[in-house]
Length: 230
Ligand SMILES: [Fe+2]
Image 1: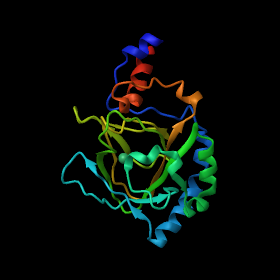
Image 2: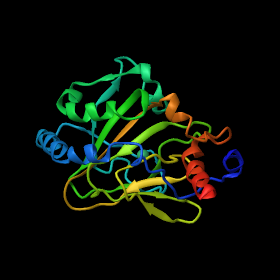
Image 3: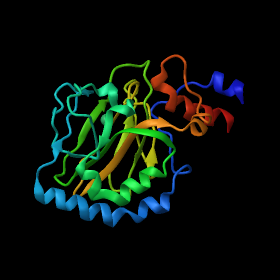
């Protein structure tokens, strides 16, 4: 087992499904609830726009039209730094979190010891999220879970070396956001997903072969480890 971990190479494109670690039935049961509450936000037309910084294609739009509902934000006066998403002491619930109490209760069941940024991303305008990386620091690995209550959002990870795309098939994932790209295709109708950042619990972290070098590749190494064992 240890040998496999030490010799495993990162797989790209790849994602580690978390469906076996979370209550997928509970998650799916939230679909109509989330849809209903997101539709209220669409009517209000006041949510922030997603911005796309580290794009694969230089002409990709910086603000593709996709919207965000922030369920946690940093404390007032905290200067913006993307790399703070897992500095959990900086983040507090927003008023919007009170609109999504069932979602917040579900998040409590996830294998985190603490949470930082919590973001709900949605689109009803047929917009794509062009392929991008989240940051450019391979020495940093963010613990996070991406999840959704239905399978409508065509969300992919992409290996820049080969151009190969891999679409996420299930309800949840953790993936390397630095050494590969990710994005979502445009589709008709409402699509949404949630991302929770923070620190996995010690029990959960003990399952994961955290990489000493190129820490951002840890989810991709975990996939490689599983393939080496099988
Ligand atoms: Fe991203």
